[in-house]
Amino acid sequence: MTTTPAATTDATYADAVEREIVLTRVFAAPRSAVWAAWVGDDISSWFGPAGFTCTTFERDVRPGGHWRFEMVGPDGTVYPNLVVYREVVPESKLVFDHGDGEDDSRTFLVTVTLDEQSDGKTVLTMRQLQPTREARDATIGFGAVELGLQTLGKLAASLGVE
View 1 (spheres, helix red, strand yellow):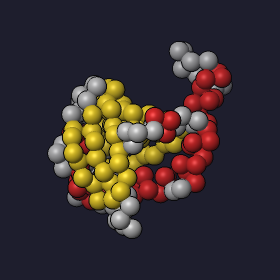
View 2 (spheres, one colour):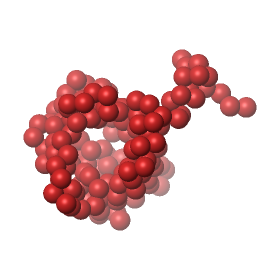
View 3 (cartoon, one colour):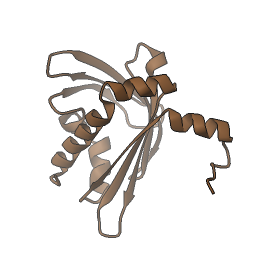
């Protein structure tokens, strides 16, 4: 029997599932190290897909805080980004809105959770909730799953646990 969270109806739960992209990776590193990578000043060294660079202009990791940055693709295309943090639970969870700072219709919700295992490894789960099913499908269509996995691969390399 499938159950839904108590605060949602079957219709809203089904809608959310159809708008969601979920990526998971296990890191052979303690949760504290993975957390430090997400909230530390070195995030620009690993954040973004393979071949992309990231430049941070402003960062304040707290509820209501912002992270303004640019990613530059291998072809030189500049992608402005704005993250607005909603929830920050040390060593456990980050929740934020992620967009480009100009077009609110493309902003999506991201929830990153970190679960430490008994063997000292950390399971990272990143959930992207797109504004519509069509936006989710378009995001997957341009390669967001592979690009997200590349980003997590760069995180693993920065942790020295490839």
